[in-house]
Image (tube, rainbow, N blue to C red; front, side, top):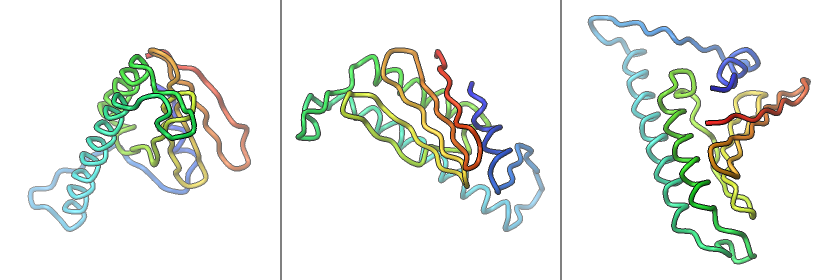
Length: 145
């Protein structure tokens, strides 16, 4: 899995913890944590359903000649979402945006503090990452699923 969660943790103003504290009686903070957890579940389910819906797009889906995403691209994007959902660190960082470009590539975007990242899927079993932080060199990497 990509180093994005660690990178986001190290390069954003927010602080993150992967430790879970279990108390016998839920405090208001724990209640909020459960609320955030429910929100994360909903975000990931909505994201997966939206990616799945891309299977129904045809060519010229935008009215300007855009290509439909190929089935293997949509399948890779669905597998990618499922991998991120299962990853404890990524789970707390649902993408902030999902889009399709005119070539049929599926793009996931994250914006956390001064960090911007995108993961582009334009072919089967491959994700192209770009991670950019204000004041630092932009990183690019290719990941095979």
